[in-house]
Length: 217
Image 1 (cartoon, one colour):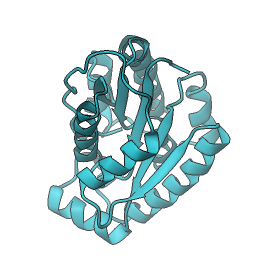
Image 2 (image 1 turned 60 degrees about the vertical axis):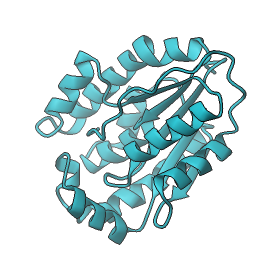
Image 3 (image 1 turned 90 degrees about the vertical axis):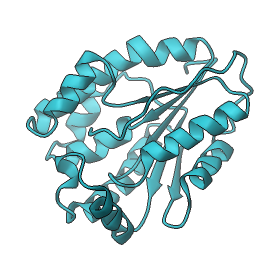
Image 4 (image 1 turned 45 degrees about the vertical axis):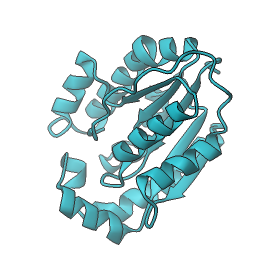
C-alpha cells in the first residue's frame, strides 16, 4: 500500500509494555539501517491531545468518533508523508486498539469498522499479549494511565477482545503476529517483531525516533 515505506502497528492491553517495546524496536530498526519514525495514537497533534485529555470523560460512540477523527488526521499529516519518503513508521496503538477498547466502552463492532472505513491498514499488525495475572501485576506496579486500566477485572476481557480483533484484522487481509511477552524482555519482543516484519532494506538516511509515551486510546 504505502510503498516505499513500511507501516507497522503495535497494540496490546494496557500495561503490556507497548511503549518500551516500540522504543526498543525503533532502535533495532535504526541499527539495521532503516529510516524510522515512531509515533503514537492518540497522536501528538492538537486533535490527538484533545482526544487524550477527554478520554476519561467522553465515552462510547463519541470517544470512538474522536479517535477515528484523530486517526484520519494522523494519517494525512504524519504517517502517509513519512511512508512516502520510504521511512518505516512504527505506531504505538492503531486500529486493533479501537477494535478492543471501544468495544470495552460498549461500542458495536460494526460501528467501529464503519467509522474506520478507508483508513490505511498496516503492513504488519503486532499484538503483544501475556497472561492476565502478569498484566494485572504490571498495572498495579505501574499504576493506571486512564479509565480503561482502572478495573483489573477488565484485563481478561481485554485479552479476549484482542483475540477477536486478530480474526477481524485477518478478515481484512492484514498480516498479524501475536507475541507473548510473559517471559520476554522488550528487546526480545522487538527482535521477534523485526524478524517477523522482514522489512525491505532502507533507501533513505535514518531519522531519530519520536518520543512515544504510553497513552490512552
